[in-house]
Image 1 (cartoon, rainbow, N blue to C red):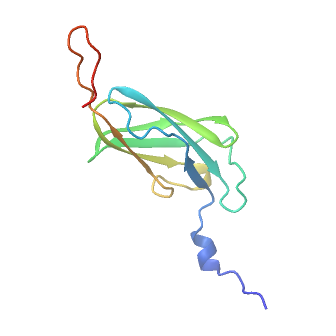
Image 2: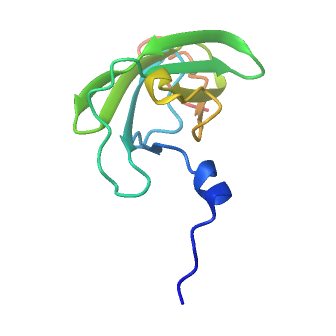
Image 3: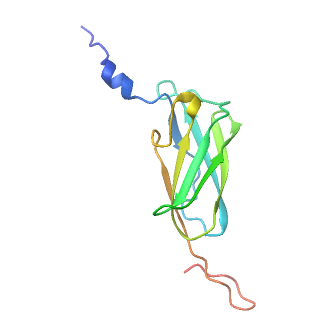
Length: 129
């Protein structure tokens, strides 16, 4: 005897899975974060490429410097966006794909901590306290 699939559980599975490929989680403030992520089918693992409406929303906690950028499709299911992290602090990063009916709160988000960089003394290298 085989159990039937529960339609309520199936309904909770999102049509896409996100995997953040960016390894840098502690960039320096004032630099750009090269955000890369993969979108795939959660059942088959097949890449979800060629979407033209993937956007990235990010802000510095608690809710400063809110920005929305369009992500570019760069490879099989892999998307990329350059996020300028102007000031030190924790940043929350969300991804949306309206064509898949996915809003910013539907996929896992990413957090990064932009570090404050100390100014270099005259003739010396910058230090990161």
